[in-house]
Image 1 (cartoon, one colour):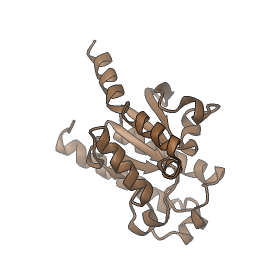
Image 2 (cartoon, rainbow, N blue to C red):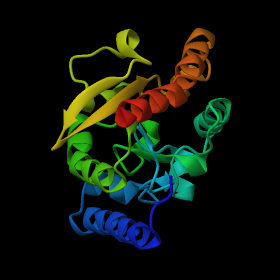
Image 3 (cartoon, rainbow, N blue to C red):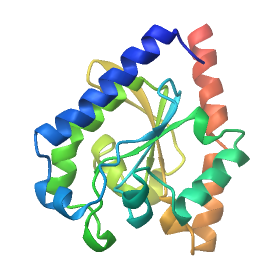
Length: 204
């Protein structure tokens, strides 16, 4: 899975440049003012799987890392259950600053950050993008309802390449909802199988 070290350092530089551009371009200044940290992402920059949530919460804002609160612990458990760990994957959000009082990100906030997310995905170049919750799903699969397509891999054209999207429920929504939690855990276990299918396709 790992690539040449020189390539890794280039990727890291590209990702740092995206972060610098968000600050330089003053993306969502109101959010930036109320947030403690710009939360870019965390994990393996050579990951085959990128997880995309909605926006940082209180814990994420304080630590500058995505998914470190209760939903993050649940995400870690599900990764382990699927034979993965955080060091195998890359985790980020569409919106990189915490919205006040943990409200949902607004459409214009998501639109403002979208180009930077696209650049992140171009640099990391994963095999699968897993969207967590409807906010991140709707940009990749507009017109789809998460209740109808969760856990189903969808191949879409993304820029100049094809990419596989797997929409999942958001861990935070499933924390206190038993049936949604069971569904999310079940969907998570499909991820290694989807990777294997893609590898087999490539080998044919």
